[in-house]
Length: 199
Image 1 (cartoon, rainbow, N blue to C red):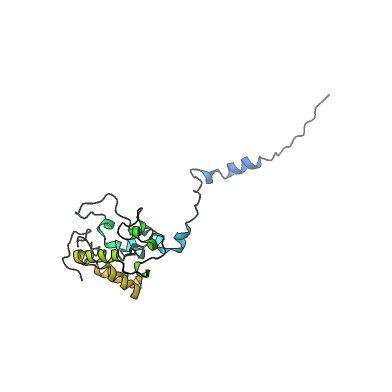
Image 2: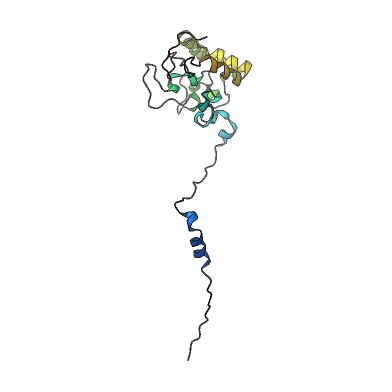
């Protein structure tokens, strides 16, 4: 009894293995892209949730709306944001700004229900503006550092955040190198020059 077998002179290659061999060069030394995580909703709707380092302001040495705290403090001129302590020593990790702190502001935000629950962006939106805590903070900064947070807030309320940032850019710009003058030390940490008087 003979066993007959079908013989195909032109066998077709395995489709899957043939396709992988054919396109092997496209997979070489490449890994799958990471899974995209869903964006937080508040980052799409609230501009204050976009970190400063993701903005073009940083490259242009300009202040961003995200750097203006609810109390009116411009974090861009703060010693901690610039990477220095009050005693002039360099910090290992500079502050990210009041709006991006891991802990709430101990002076105002922690005691204010509207700010803590993000019902307002600036203190002037509160019917109790200016509150007692803000008045105390403003008095200390006016007497010690020559800057008024309440005045900043009224400027933003009247002229808008963009106009306020333009005026801040001119006021705190170092005339020597174009860097930023610190409100606490009156020093430009980029060139080391100290400005005794700022208008």
